[in-house]
Length: 321
Ligand code: GLU
Image (cartoon, rainbow, N blue to C red; front, side):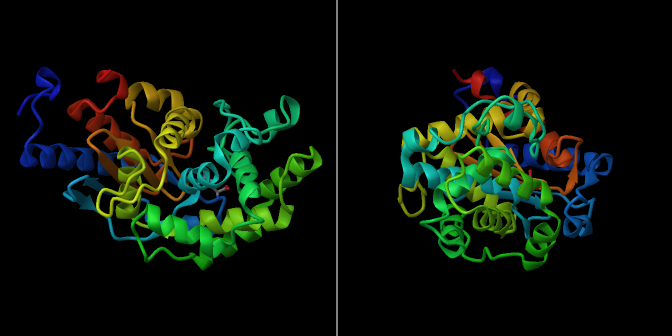
């Protein structure tokens, strides 16, 4: 096997070669897991196994490769922000959505309130808490939780997604910073729905239970131009996919997004439950689960594994311009 597949871009790796690359990525991720810490600011998340790690790849032909902990369900957390944005673009359109939230990386942590208060009336982007909460407020008067869970089930090709009640209760009991954000948005006159209804819907969407396969399927739909390759259903318009991928690329990994962009170069989104979705070329969706987090809030094992995959499979978007 070549050291990378860069030498001959026309050649696709064989299934065995691909499997070997994923096996090594899994090994590297597993090795890195003890260096991170499980999130505990939402008490229920602290119960996750810090050593767990799983990786699931799904391509447009339905071929899959998986290693490790791919059946454990965990809460989707911030990966829901991708779904929230997809729904807003579909039902509110680009212009309306982005008249309520900006599209700039914030460089701050996911739950920061500082720039929102000091520098702007609108949240910086839909991938941070303030932006996602604001985007939820665009939808909250038309869609209930069951509607939005239905969209998540479709996009993740996973009818078994349900509300993780324990995580939801834990977030509900401890989510004061998110309440502060929603009321700050209200005080600025930009929130589009009732603050309690909005933040409750946001907590519930963060508490959807998924597994690595669900996230791989979500990544595949995004990577495949918004079309579910198995049903042919075009869920997300192509220009909306471009917007979603751009925001995942620039803002999807918290204040590590720049480093992830340089080192991995694949549109992705992580959540503090340990999940990560990546939409790689191919089309290829990669879903990862590793609840030990780096200091930014990204799964430390998932980042490590994606670095390896990107290098060996030439996944960096600027490698194939
Ligand atoms: N529900 C979490 C929060 O709002 C999501 C954070 C995340 O995954 O980044 O704090």
